[in-house]
Length: 368
Ligand code: GLA
Image 1 (cartoon, rainbow, N blue to C red):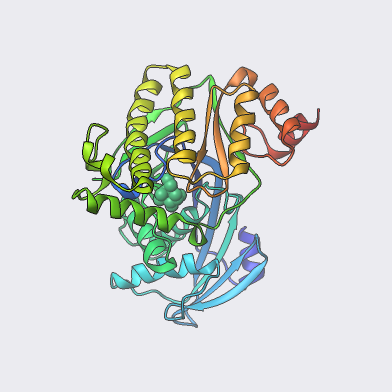
Image 2 (cartoon, rainbow, N blue to C red):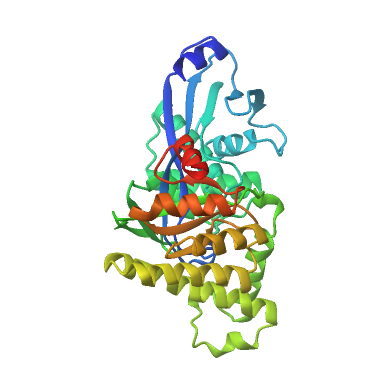
């Protein structure tokens, strides 16, 4: 990467920073309802190398290794649908806090799949903010970086996301899940089991959340909260009879959010008490709720979910924003190989995102 930087930009990188992708284990579409989530980080990352270019104030010279594309942007430039918008939006957030942004050379490299529901955009934002914070010696905590990144994505890019992705990508730890209360951003790390693997498998259908019904789901939740006269759906409980009077669609949305919040609490308890069969059932209930109540699954992820169970997973669920992307399945480590072999034979379009082995080994197992 160092050499790449010099070859492309003709000067040396001053700082590099990385941020991982994430898989959400439980709590989908709860974060923008002030609810609970339980994500963890993946062994995939985006790395950003950066240097100040004193010759061009305000110009951001960007190169993506993945796209093999170079682009010049200015902080004042018009919004665009380009990948560079995520980065420009983060720098604009810093500028709004009176931080002077010099001319920059920025190199981006990532092995996080895009549109798979594993937070490639949050990783891009957090990696950049961490690199710039180091470069300009800004005193920003990981939590402040998460907040800035989420604001950049919602205000700058126009994707009205919650804060789960940016929080876990900025504060996540290996082998632990981040049990986060998005109402007040308090969190706790929960150990993940050693003898079970959370396998993350891509359905092959990517999503673009900015173009999906994500925004609509968020609006439906806000309308329901208004009708129920509560600040957010976090305040609603299953015994709340008022929500039964909502129009059909809104009632289904509320039912998902309320039960999903409870599933996060139950999942944390099951993890702490090593109750893996229960954990699997909670994951299945979450998938079905995303399918039937929140209506964010698609036929490809439903099929992958079914095949993952048929092949011997204890439980599985669609993970991330939905409308495509990946599932996460709970598989006992000692059968992971045969599980993946059987799944890949049944569903050749399924591709591994996190399986404990390199992509090459996974491919060999699939065709063995
Ligand atoms: C996307 C958003 C998150 C969250 C999930 C759904 O990943 O960025 O804030 O809402 O969808 O749980």
